[in-house]
Amino acid sequence: MGSFKPFNMPMRRSRLTKRPLRAIGRGGLYLLLKLLHALGGSVLYMRARTWSLRRSGVVFEGPPGFIDPSAVFDTSRKIVLGSGTVVARDTYLLTHDYSITPAADYVGQLGEMDLNITGEIHIGKNCFLGLRSIVLPGSEIGDGVIVGAASVVRGKIPSGVVVFGNPATVYERTESWVMRKLTSPSSHQHLSQCKPKTTRTRFLRGSREMI
Ligand SMILES: CC(C)(COP(=O)(O)OP(=O)(O)OC[C@H]1O[C@@H](n2cnc3c(N)ncnc32)[C@H](O)[C@@H]1OP(=O)(O)O)[C@@H](O)C(=O)NCCC(=O)NCCS
Image (cartoon, rainbow, N blue to C red; front, side, top):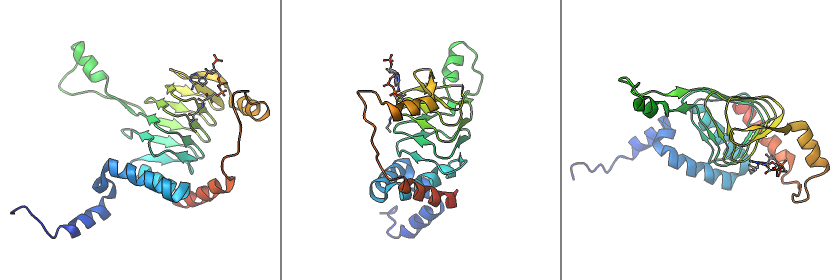
């Protein structure tokens, strides 16, 4: 009975106001974002998502296009995201690499301290990071880059290209890819309109106030 605190609600409430992210935890935050995404649509969800990412150190150079709730931003180092960029489901943006610690230990080169390799990630505007893609520490992606599904990006990717694979390599210029898709989509694919542009504009206006 000694540890029972029947009146602990005020303390909880103040913790929730002072440190909301720590109080609800990562799992809680993910569920909250998923709920907002399902109930409130893009506008409300994206406001909450960009707010929480900014708190953890992500720098937005303008309002992002869309960031899926499941995308992981490792903010050991700075991550910069350009405006209009879309981050699809299960994408990982990694800014740290701990592999050096067991490896250095294996070759007898580890001193008293564990080691970590880190690097900032810079992603330009109007990029698309495909489903399950991984961006490794120190990567720099230019503007208007499409990263294909399940690709692993490392190093520097110039602006205006479509890349995929592991490691991701250039497949085509973004401009010719778009023109090809608009004029003659592949026989096994179908190009359709999915949502009104105004929805995105409304979100962009909303988040610009916030950013
Ligand atoms: C990269 C991408 C944009 C290329 O689109 P595309 O031009 O229509 O590609 P195609 O289907 O015509 O394939 C062209 C070639 O690239 C290969 N390819 C395409 N995407 C690939 C990928 N992600 N990884 C590896 N190879 C890929 C195909 O196997 C094909 O090879 P082949 O010529 O030897 O047969 C697209 O495949 C992609 O990955 N889009 C992202 C989808 C996504 O993540 N959606 C999330 C929900 S919004």
